[in-house]
Image 1: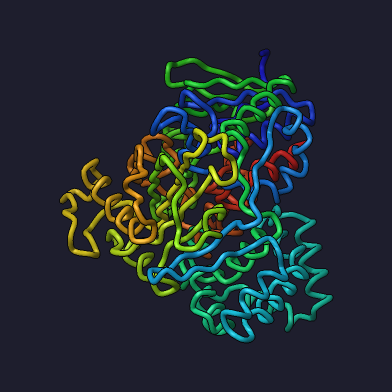
Image 2: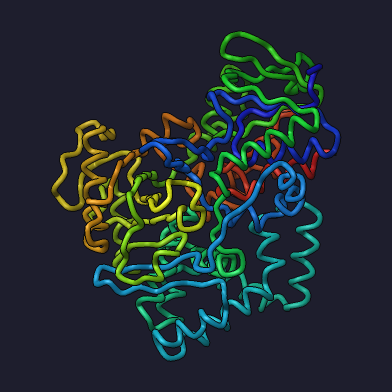
Length: 528
């Protein structure tokens, strides 16, 4: 390739979306990935037994198929082999006493289910989601739009005029509520609480966090409408489709290309003009550099030695990372025999004692303790896509969203935690045994079906992807003070930096984490 128009550092979903969208505009893009394969948190590997294919980290793509990026790129990606596998029962919950609830892609069925749990809960749910549907344009503009933009300002002003200022202020007041408040005040059934409380963890929040109620409602709406799809044949096929699309557009992708620094010109503007690789090679770009990294990587490494304004330096110093994550993968000789037959077709099943159990485990994690009873997210990819494993066999994809980044102890008082607070292989496997013990309580003969198990601690995840600081899959703490206008820094304006022609995208930037590709889409849209 001749000198590219843009260099993109990193190859996660936001980088891929940015590259594809810029390519549609005729821009020549060079995407550089430090690892041997592209994808960031999207990777598919045979990590357990022969014939079993696992999505090692990300597996569910509801945020992608409901995103503006997918709306724009779906046809092009589909022509290059991207397809999704679905189930009509995207999620559910199973509690210690064997009680369960399944959530369907059917409003009437869900209303009937919740009404059966507690009189009035079905009607309350229908009312909440109907209101959510009416608020979607404003909600999606705030959650996924360019906040510092004329379009967003016009929409906010229009909504304020339409609703009246007091009602508009009331909307924001309600949006800042907690999931616990929404669940306990609006619904009588503890099983309803147990169904939705774990989903808050997938937004990087906890049940008592501000605006966690709004995020829970958004998830309820999105999962009912779009399900919890996975990529047919493994998430690697999404990467292959993006790679083909980007190269078909004249772009280039290089792996094993570790960017060590940003090159800046010598004019008074000191704009970004390219990158220097770890091996000393220098690559220049005509129109700028796009970094899909954390603030730690951008300002602590790529701009090391360059002048950084004091407010930016202080903002980076105060930037916080959230809870870590742990993954456990099973290859099974046969599908799990859940206590209720309809659980076998659920895409993402949560095992939890309920709202208080989620709250307790999240709090233990935030205090550096291994949760005594963790919230367990169980993915069943083979139920949606049998090609993932041999006939008659199955796969379980487990995510533990409450794994401490730095360990201080074990809430159960059983496991020995290293004095330096670091994860070890022995501790990882011992904690996985605790999780497996919960599975065994629900699935008769489970251990007899296990062919292989593979675990990844927060430290293992960071070793695979430098942007997963302490195993945090969300690019940073997702509380209100570090989201929206204030993500990643208090002075951030969309995806610009203090360096001309240097742009910042990724989970650490607005709209935040997830597989929607939002920041890559917004930046590509803004670049002429």
